[in-house]
Image: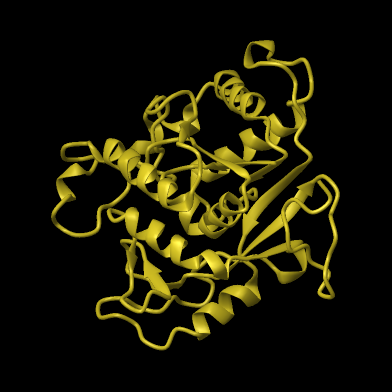
Length: 287
């Protein structure tokens, strides 16, 4: 069995799907992560590496390659793959920023080139299951939305004879969006009993979630949550794990729970066996 997860920047793979990666890697599944930019426009936590940011040395992307290798090694995945090769497209930043107008920004990628690159990975890895983002890209980042658009089209045409330069046709069996259900998020936030100094609790609606009735699949990753925690720590420029080990924060210092269930929406393929709640407990159910 093979699993391909497509993410926008280094650290996205661990934050939203780190438990899934570790769970299936431990089970013997070949797990591959495709990352579409290097996250050059990110902020840096702490002073030691602050000079790496885009408006100073502009070396953060290379450092985040190092962090990604470390995180995926902890989780047990294959070595990382970068869309078009490392550094082909640059982090686009948020809407309205100068980064978004950079010709090399991922949102400005030539559609045919980017789609061919996506298909090349999909057809060479030949996964049974693919994971991407919902149309909002989780929290509305343009690069996440670009991932959604590209991986959706690539999945839909992967078995056709289009873009023959990208390899022989291959049709995966299932395609999922990684999401966080409302109840899962509210329960995780409610369980936070102590907020580290300098951090704050999220305001209502500040963290992205989806209605629980759209969630089709919930994977229990408790047995590998320590690996997820360690992988989060490997992304030290972007993530701080609280001393308790049950929550983390990005550079905005908003506390978030480290969830021990990771949730998905099946958007292509057939739903496999479900439990009494009506949800799958395995991305490979029915494969």
